[in-house]
Image 1 (tube, each protein chain N blue to C red):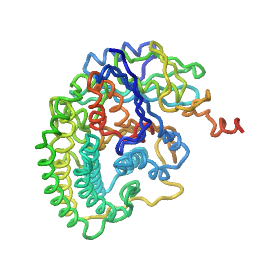
Image 2 (image 1 turned 120 degrees about the vertical axis):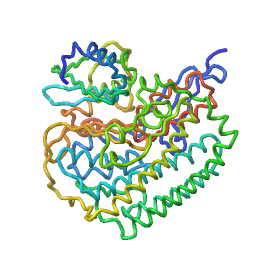
Image 3 (image 1 turned 135 degrees about the vertical axis):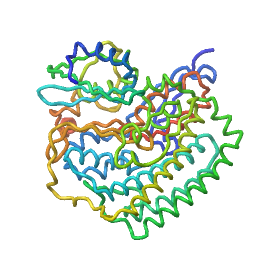
Image 4 (image 1 turned 60 degrees about the vertical axis):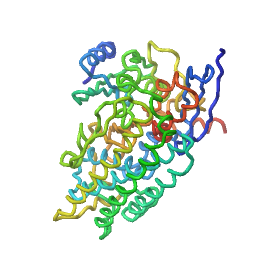
Length: 367
Length: 124
């Protein structure tokens, strides 16, 4: 049979951003994929070079609008390392709590939109958004922003968390634990879901390493790799949690890893809340934003974080008050690169299940 | 770890044999008098990370070996560096644009010599 070329997009699949795929199909089997990115390129790396350090967090957050806090924190942590600033102990716990809440919110959004990608329109979506709204409400009350927060400051946070923060966070994690457990009945016991995800889009262990995927995609292929374990930051070395991994590396495994990670994040949050409560000094305030902040040392710094989508990294060559050069390793960039490897020889109808399972956010790829 | 650009492929192959099987990132920094390309490689078993850097003193026509046959994931990183810094990677097919889709200029935006709005002003 002759090869047919299908152009997809540039479209905005679910919440992922703008993407174009040129797919060659033989019948309904994918023969080749040409992934075209770059529609949302804004030159963030160049923008950073022209702004003082604390001017940058607001647009660092826009790199990943599904989990804005995580990129914001990564950038602020890079500045802290470059300037040699210690983060207050209370602030370390608060950051861990907020970042894990952000991870939960991101995974919840992903589960909802992933089921939409599979054609299970808006049932699970409404459920996950109900829980996500509860998480966002708490983040909003802490950071005073609904979608973007900008509440990290060098050395700490913008403001003290509200007085009832710990109680509300405890209640919220209990609520999340109960509700997220319920998803199992609708997802895992659903034969249509299982048929559309099991043994579909397999990424073998060896290929996962070779193609440089990270985060849940890498762990779904059976590799035990998590920056929080391999290079612990803040107090992650004192916290007990496990890293869920799977064996087959198919679409279902990538879903399962993210689903299990929600419960691990809940464990982390509970322990951090306990530790924060028992602290004598609960001060979390960081430096105020000024025109001239602390000077950075000239040595290049490299900071890694486990973002909801995988490993994020900033390599920065500092000048005293602004970056000379900042280069990002964004997790989605490496993950979408592997799409061709995963999807070739799959059925065309499975393409969006595979694409969805990579959990990409396009601005994260395009920078 | 800084190495000569001729030794790049050999050093990376050696590291890969020692278990550094995962390429995290290839990046470039323009120091004006020279360009520096940094390879961040990682051992997924022992969790070690190594930075290997190469200095390119010819900034007019920078040339370096492609490592796509050692680490396939370097493909897009090399394409990105090619359009942002103008470095040519030897030993691979022609590189299409990756991020700068409608970029007609021969300027390389992440070079320090790049001037803002030059392209726009020319059109006026």
